[in-house]
Length: 107
Image (cartoon, rainbow, N blue to C red; front, side, top):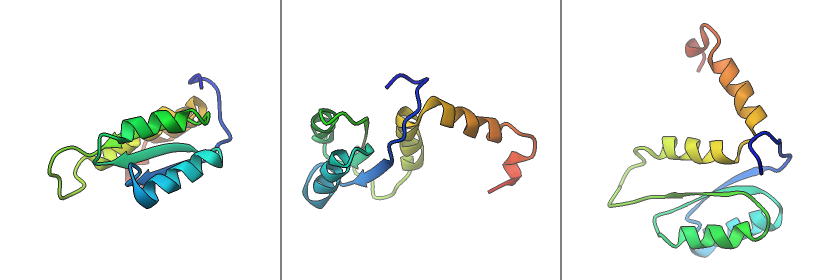
């Protein structure tokens, strides 16, 4: 979808989406016409994303690499992936609020 268009689709985040229940949930989300952010430690996640995109939904991947026991950096990865499937008008509104004086005080 071009960045200047808006979407009425819901966004679903699915972890462990390369196999098992996570993969089933991602497929159900695509069938229900949800845009997706899918995450897994398995590089197969990129193949799964290609398969799910054939259903006409936007899919972004987050691949956990290495022997990571924690979630360090995952927040930034998810925000980046979400930004790729969020309509530009929604992002512009959000960024406008973030640029307001005093907005750093709001948590």
